[in-house]
Length: 238
Image (cartoon, rainbow, N blue to C red; front, side, top):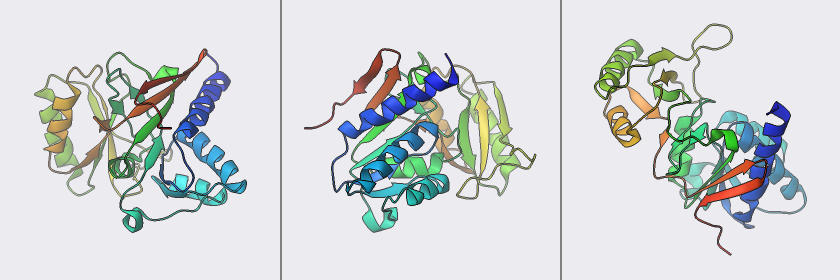
């Protein structure tokens, strides 16, 4: 499949997300290439008189939304959101997700947790039988980063996960730093047989700020393929 056709699938999924959007909503705006299509389409609607308030999950999304004329607010000013629309790096049949390929997992999870509904938009290539094809991002504090990495390695090996764990680099060779000022570890474990157990182990590791396992958070996944958009999970309310 060509990059152009995959991009068309992403845009189709983004369009389908508007079945869930109502005027006046407080919306979480996701990050990444698929979510960017949603923000793009939302900006078109705003220019036509559609009124919403958005909370971006990354500085990149903030810039895109502002350029498109979308009204933004801080999460602390709204506290609770009606809906978040975001992408994913992969998802399984239980609507468990791996997110954070763009490095925005901390804010994405905070915004998702503050939302009544989390709608995920994705192309068909993101659907996997078992999580782990995409390296799991783990955000860690820069203080004691090597020590945290060692503890994380020990904790995951105890679960039988022996893949490589590496700090994410930038293109210039320096370490990638998230919008929150943290490092990202990319954990290439391969297939993750027990995502819940791994999430618990990561949550219990000092120095881990957040991880890219989103479990029990997505209410709906809109997955676009060559035959159209398929809906998994909860349908849109009328």
